[in-house]
Amino acid sequence: MHNRDWRTKSLLAAFLVCACAGIFCVSGLRSATKFKLHAYITSRVDDRTLMILDDRLDLTDATRVLGRDASGEHPMKAADLTPGMLVEAEGMWLDKHKFFPEKITVDLQQDDKRVHGTAYLQEEPEDASQIAGGQSGELKLDGYWLDLNTSTKRNWSMEKIAAKSGKEPEQLAACHVKYSGVRRQDGRIDTQEIELGPPASPDDYKMPHDLSVVRGKDSLTGINVLEFHQGKKIVARLKLLDVRSVQEYVSHLGDSLLPAGAQGTSRPIEFRFFVVEDPSINAAALPDGTLLVNTGLLGAIDNEAQLAFVLSHEISHVLQVHYRREVEETRASRVGLTIAGIAAGVFVGDAGIFLAQIGVASVVNGHQRELENQADRLGLQNVIEHGYDPREAPNLSRMIISRYGSRTTSKLWSNHDDSLIRGSFLTIQLARAYPGQNWDKARKNTPAFLQMKDDLGPVKIM
Ligand SMILES: [Zn+2]
Image 1 (tube, rainbow, N blue to C red):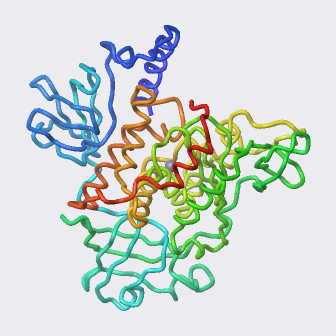
Image 2 (cartoon, protein in one colour):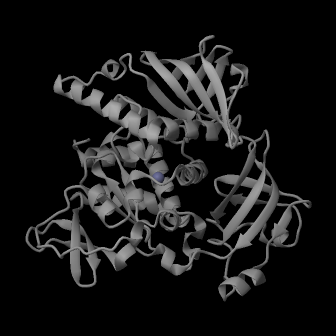
Image 3 (tube, rainbow, N blue to C red):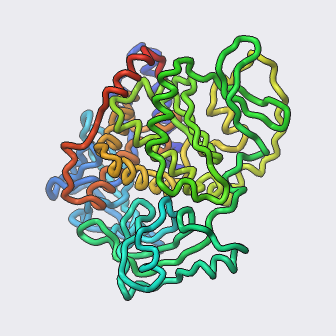
């Protein structure tokens, strides 16, 4: 946290200077000041050069390399730096994409080969009976393909779930699974242990403070709006983009990307996709399945593959119950809430600020890294299965980096953590989970997307 604050402040200062001078100069951000990059190594060019997305890190004899584990920091050899490692590089920019690292610290607690985690099933597994019967089989989970063999330790019983949660689930989709295993060369996971758990409870998909999100029309202006209700009180109104064809296009695309098991949740989730008038390059998923896509995002993206990835990522936040997981750890929504009702004609100026006030800041600003990575893994798997070119996901991070001219921005999907760490994670995930795959023939764009861009027209992007 501390590092990030330091970086944010220095960048902000640099940005203000540039903005005052009337130029958005990238080099101005990179004066002789020290800078920290926090990201995954995406490739190793030779013994002297590492790549993080498009940035070259030139190692010299002056570069100190340290590994950090539970017991502290220890010296490491530069030769041991490999793709997939999460590093913090401290140093200076020499050129637009050239960085001189004085010190590189590797997070050794992130094991690249051993994989473990928890996730909710987003689909009904095809090999359900083999899995339950102790045989070999495969399971699609958490953005991976898990291979189970006869030596996989399993705790997999619907009866046990029934004993825990009071009733036997009708299907496996939406059930919780805990797993551990080892990543193979081909990207699949050799599963060592697997444990089935009950689905999330119906309350986990509720909006905090008994809020509900309702589509409406402002009585004074007739503008289409999204209203946040608390009982009979309207506490906020977001302006919806008033171009029906664009709304329909986004809804249609969103529906087409919903995983097969999206109906298996304990509370039926109605996924609803809304384009809201907001210039920031962002999208957000509320816990009840309401997805907000900003006009700024639609204006900035280049193709349908990018939008499909954003929507898939946001859908996963809902199905993986990330808001509830965040609340458990941060107690975000336990903050009391008293908002007065609002008069007709009053609109929320900044959706991000409003959503933070009601305790769902993480849906706009990004969840913890582990949860963002999970949504990214599932998002990549989903777009691949729908025939899209998944390389457009890291390209979206690249677009944001070049648009903002910096490695971090003030907020948003762009800083749904920062774009460099996300772009590098997506690149690494594609390389290790889908080695040797060729996506040259995969879909990037469609006539419907280009028509949507036409109908949208020029929009403000911030
Ligand atoms: Zn996210």
